[in-house]
Image (tube, rainbow, N blue to C red; front, side, top):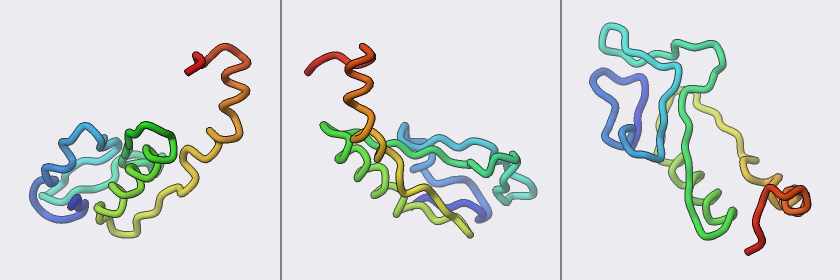
Length: 95
């Protein structure tokens, strides 16, 4: 479980390669947002398909507890609309 806003250190999950903190810092033992973008954490997922990578990323998000947290629920959705364009423009190799 990954928690932000509590006293002490971030859990070991924050040190994993699938989590990247941005714009956060500690002040008097409490973790605070330091930036202005509103983005404080990047979570990634991997899989043999975009759908599986997307599902893994959202499963990881379920294990994060940050007060007043919100996140996008459409990450990766455009892939299904845009992948043909990327192939035709030469950005992707044929599988």
